[in-house]
Image: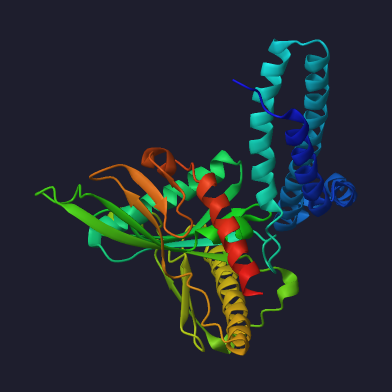
Length: 371
């Protein structure tokens, strides 16, 4: 069997990696890393825990991104040297090793290339994710809980910090809804490709006749607000209710009314938080969620105005986007991109990078076609 055309493959990889380097701009990021390192070294850094967390998280993410790009460039240079040595000495073992390295390097560069497609207004932000059970009764609530675990496991695989703000448990099993934050740069740009309706087809474990059941859950992804966003919310526009936090089955997990529910009266948006230890902390977290929802609402209003000018009816983020089939066969399929795998267990354990990458590419193709 003929080996790969190394000259062509190496040239293609060099071109792709050069494009990535132009977007990532390691030199600019190194300058920002130096500034952040000075802040981390300051003795009063942890006087403000929220700012300290933001600074250290940003520093860690930038260092990892620069190391990744620099590492790929070093691997590409080493691969070129290995190919040259193998060809000069007709060393088949070296050429076989180079072919294996080429395959893995191509996959790594392709995965990083997806990051360069994230150039939206808020793509660099952290993400606020809400999962809601929809049609399907107790199966839908159980499915929503499965999706919550899937995304938390995905974040864990990537070593992204997460914080669950609110979980509303269903009576029999699963959850009605849950909201959590993924604290990593570009989390919004990455996870926004997951927004939409997810469908599960399986033999219901809650049906004593073991019938096949189709259930649905919705995923909403919002960018986390920052100080520069200037989301002004007059106190008179808010109704704030407090209640006692509770866990599955209504079992009390708190002995005080520390949970907070905030209603934004002009829009009717309702948010709640019950996972912090104090009412003040829950109120602050709920306000952050509300600000993100209002920020997204403003973005959608602007987008709708532009679409109206272009004669475009808008996007279809709320439409069905992925199907998880456990019976009569095993398959998970993205209905937009046609990307599919036959291992639902791995997907529900957080192995969703292939779906995310194909979704980002699909979105960029649509955006390019619309311009």
